[in-house]
Each structure stands twice: as C-alpha cells, then as structure tokens.
Image (cartoon, rainbow, N blue to C red; front, side, top):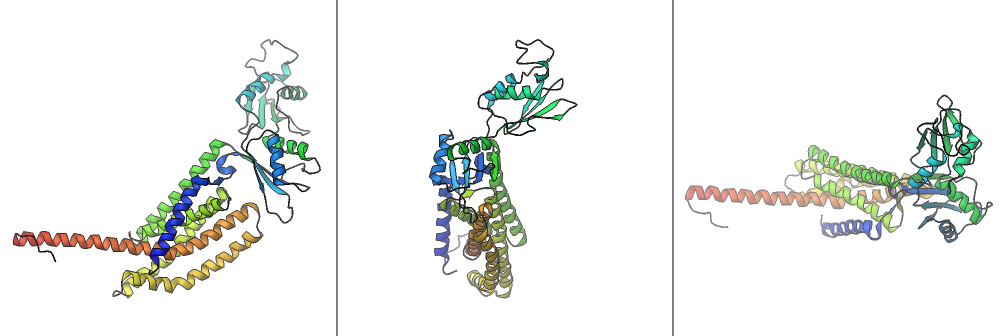
Length: 406
C-alpha cells in the first residue's frame, strides 16, 4: 500500500497509452474483423517478402498484407491477405445470369437459339455468399458442356479445374452446381505465373475469407462479449463480497484487457477472434486471483479489528502471495511451452496469455486492492460527513442554535 501511488500511476499510463494506440497507429485487425481473403502458402523455394508483395500488387490487388510466418520446418511460409473477397460483383452476376440464359418461361422463344438451346436455359440462378459457387436449375436435363461455354463467355470468370465441375447434384430437379475460381484460387494462379510453378505449390495450406459486414458483426460481438463478462463479474463480486469490492476488480479486468491489446499493437500482431478468446480467459483468470485476495481481506477484517484497512490489505496480500506466485508460475510454464514451440495462431494466443498472466497477477495486488481501499476511505468520509451534518441538525433542533464548529 505504501507504493500504490507509483503503481496506480503506471497502470493509468499503460491503459491510456493502450487505448490511444487502438486508433493511433491502430490495431492490426485480422481477416476475422476486417474482412478480406487470406491465403497461407508454404513456397517451395526462397521467396523475399518484398518480392512477394510486388508480385501480388502486379496482379491488381491494392495494399496487400504479406506476413512471413516463423516456421522451423519451412522458412518460406507466408500469409498473404488482400481486401477483395469475391470474384462476382453485382454487375458480373447480371452478366452471368444473361450468359446462363436465365428465363422465367423456358418455352418462350429466344433471339439466339444456338446460344440458348432448350437444355441450357436456366430457370433459377443462385450465388453463394463468397460468389465462388453457382447453383442453377433447368426444366430438362442440362447440357454441361454448353454450361461451361456460357460461363467462360463472361470476362474475368474461370471455372475451378475439376473433372466433376459443373455437376448435377439433383437429377430430379435438374439442379446443377458450378464452382468458380475464388479470389484465393486466382491469387495462387497469378503467383504461379509471376514466381514460377516450381516456387508456388499447387495448393495453399489454407484459404479463408470473411465479408466486411460479417467482420464488423464479429468485431462488435467480440467487444460486447468482453463488456458483458466484466459487468457480470462486477455483479457477482457485489453479491459475493460488498459493493466497495466490485469496482476494483472491474477496473483491474479492464486494465488487463487493455494491456494485452496495447502489447499486440506495439508488436504489430494481429488482433483476431483468438486474441479475444485469450482476453476473456485472462479476465476470468485475473478475477480468480483477485477473489482469493479479497476473500483473505474479508477474513482479516473480522480477525484484526484494530488494524487499518490499508494494513489489512498488506497483511492479506502477503499471506496469499506465495499461492499467487506458485499458481501464476505453473500456468506460465505451460503457456510458455506453446509460445516457444507453437506456430501461427497458437503462438499469438500464447503471447496474449503470457502478457495477461503477468498483468493479471500484478493488477490483483497493485490495482484492485488499492482501489478498494480508496473506495472504502471515500465511503467512510462520506458517511462521516453525513453523521456530522445529522448531529448539527439535532443540536440545532434541541438548543435552537447552530452547533459550534470543532
């Protein structure tokens, strides 16, 4: 408690700096939150990050992100992220519908019978959310070779290479599934043409895409989940202990979450759903440590009635310190194993856990407990002021004169 002013000032600085860093320079949101297409590739030969970025830009992608993944098995392991998510925009959808001879009445005459024969007139055309899959329906058995010609007639659209594409997925309804090349497929083909087939593998390790609307929903949901968790923690502590204990642990949880995000911004790490999962884990972990300290404070309040609240906090923290260090140390060892030997998402999750364990252990001692003492002192001052004011009113009612100031 004697060092609380220094540590509270440090914590306040860290939280303010972390909050500002979320806007300036800003968090590096992953595809989960920002939207776009992400391709993970393990190249067969040495590739420079600058060379790879230039190759992606030459394919027409603006401001791509090229991130080298630390992988002991393959040093040429990269993440390539572009903002584009679909090869089919609204204008292209209309062109595809026209090429597929979409009509409400297949028996109606058409201007070009050769381009739109009866077995190649779609009565229904549906596009997948990513635009890489088309489902069509016909009144009679469709001519799949003609369908291929119709699709290829639209500029910028390519069929995904496969012996079963397109294919009839429901013979009774004459329903056909047509798979188009996605942005990830087009990106891989473009890199193969720029860097060589002996450098770029046939298939990427992973391809993911998230639309901007879905990314915004995920970002809002992640923020709300952290806020709701903290609110319910405050309600639990107010019920479990006392109202004066709740604000300290809530501020400590906010402190831990902001420190983790600040470190990720400082190290230019991606903020993804895994990061939010780590933040929620640390919020619960930090609350567990704080509840242990609070429980000992409550026990010592009844044992040592002659001591001040600050002395009781010092005593309680000292009594629980060995337990806190052993628990945090054991957890840290297991998390460090993931951080040292893990790769990709696991390593980032472990990094958030490492930072969170340190921040959570620190905040249980130097943030939550001192704030509880400050709130208790403020509440005591307010109660004392109310009692003095009430005593003055009673004295005035009895003597008819205002009470003398002491």
